[in-house]
Image (cartoon, rainbow, N blue to C red; front, side, top):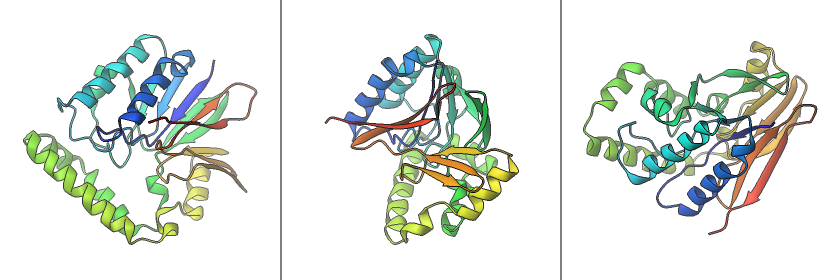
Length: 239
């Protein structure tokens, strides 16, 4: 059986075609897999596991059906949904993973990451990331009224879009030095991540880096099977 990896779906009510494509993927391809790894940014934003909005509840239900069917489900936080916590894990049947996780895929160790920590040239983002992942701050955020959290999330999205529009493309991409450093630190020859929205496979002196694409006009996933090279696969998303 195969292992599947996805990232950067950015599910939101404004993009129903992506949600439909994701649910079809869960019902078809993922049901046949041994495991599904979601490497962050499943949602455009996540304001807390108690969010009663229809889309989060529907996604949780679909993921629960998948895990109940026997497919192992793993989730890694992205920069958009870092507030996902234990209630989400319990309700979906997924295992929450740390920011750096070495999985044994088809008999080989593979480092899995969302990918945002590799973008070390984006100094402003890295500063924001350190603040936003501060656990006492997250505790306070989770206990704010729901409407207050919604407003904060909307403000952060607007500021992020404005800031990214003024950044050079290379600043928002990974640092080759950091890629090599982290692969050597975890003693792996293969790294899989998302975040940059630049799907590709890169041959490196220290091994290989595979980058998942974001789901927009196409869906992207990586399929890993024993005795085969991992495949980076895309498919069209119909409106």
